[in-house]
Figure 1 (cartoon, rainbow, N blue to C red):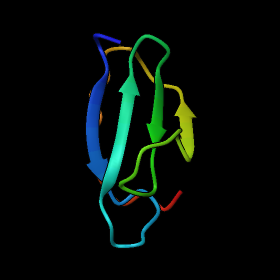
Figure 2 (cartoon, helix red, strand yellow):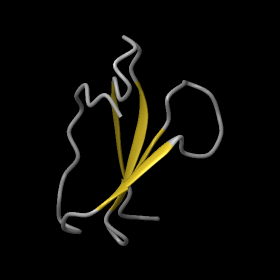
Figure 3 (cartoon, rainbow, N blue to C red):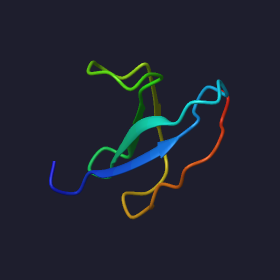
Length: 60
């Protein structure tokens, strides 16, 4: 989607930064736990469509 925002972070606290995508149109963040192609390993919905994602260590 045109409004998608990409961000990298250590989403599962394994010491490796991997990609995530925030889709404002459905206020969902999609997380990958490896630097490979594929579908999201985890997703989180909530927030506002205007939110801007930030990276961090979340421990999902």
